[in-house]
Length: 143
Image (cartoon, rainbow, N blue to C red; front, side, top):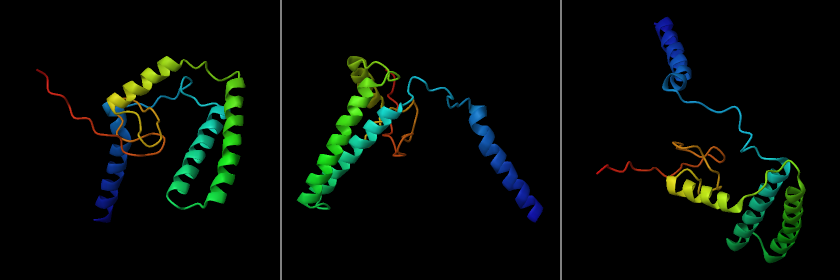
């Protein structure tokens, strides 16, 4: 009986591993276009920390003195990170119009995360960056 249970467990694990391959799902190993440079990552983290400090202050978790000190420190750090990102020779050139169009398309398709702003591949159900559930899109009936 224990042998049957062990065989069923092994079969379930093998099936779990093989199913994405059988369905043709893939995860790209090369994401050079979307790879984040160190200066870009530092900028994102600093801006998110600044957002969190604002939120904590407005919800009453921080008093005004702490808020002002943290905001000053994080603003200076964010400015330095922005300047470093602009000066980084590895950073890709920013095409603002294309970036805005991509964000709008992601929001319309439901692939852009509302929590962190990460653009996920088509068909994603969860954000690859923060794990939040993405909005489910209903299939539109054809006329």
